[in-house]
Length: 116
Image (cartoon, rainbow, N blue to C red):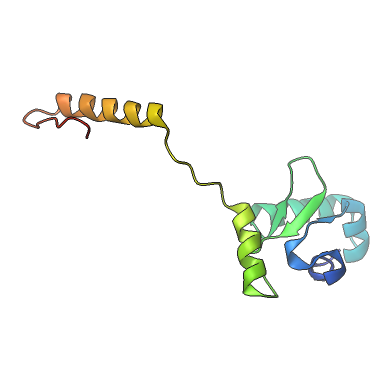
């Protein structure tokens, strides 16, 4: 397997994941399976490749590091990598207000405003 395999449009281009085994990679790069596993692990650690799940043998090129194609497709691929936005609920807001009041009470000479 090479980067060109991941770029191949028959797999969906750089935005799609490709399932490979270390044995297939070893055969493509003419090395041992152990060296191929080490190379894949290093590429994942360097964030060049992304694993779709911790136990899978499915890899995807990191769209933030490497991309060919339309900008809109890259935006969509990067959006899948970003965590969803979190909006605090009423309980979290109340806990933050309580923590702020407690911190203000410990600081001498500071007035505590309600709801801050």
